[in-house]
Image (cartoon, rainbow, N blue to C red):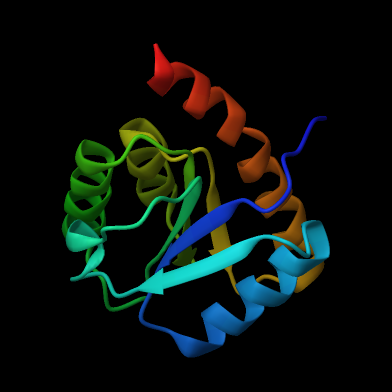
Length: 134
């Protein structure tokens, strides 16, 4: 699998522990990659380029909020992304995948499992760049 080096991942998240775990996991895949972060309310005004994204939700987020956030993200950005959720139900997973997430990661997850998911996510970045250049 070809993986470009030095890609930029946007983490849409409010949880500092999730940020640390994702940063550690990402560095296992690509030490040159950059992790950019913003809160759920701020991602719409992000004025930076990024190659992939991780949307992190916790238990207090309702499925309607998750669905609306994913739809809004998808409307504003054409990049590969996955969703991290606390104990997602089958319905939650189906909603996230239907709306466009590449995968749904159940929290908690260890950094080795997460690094594999990040590697898969970054492997899609070339396709989205190619698709957006047409």
